Length: 110
Image 1 (tube, rainbow, N blue to C red):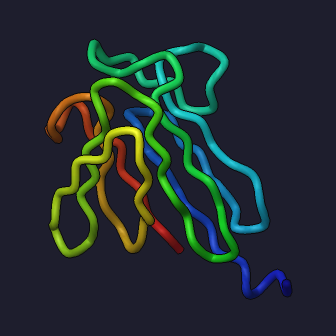
Image 2: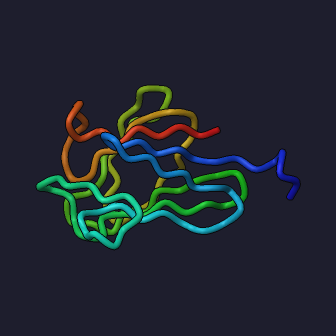
């Protein structure tokens, strides 16, 4: 894959930024200090979810009891629990509780 063909997913949580490249790998989210993006919220699990890169697609995979809320660019909110969902465009992710200003992790696919 040419460097110009690669895409990335930018995640922003409060003052933290993480970037996942489309050339492989994944990014973990949860309360555990060992995860890539540590989210300190009451309803988030230690290893709540991870995001996988597949070519130019990014897929959120939820492992939690409380599930994950995802709002995509079309403003549709989807609840994912122990399943997966493709992330596209820009949107928001909330671990274990409905989306709000305090819970939202912003994502941007570019």
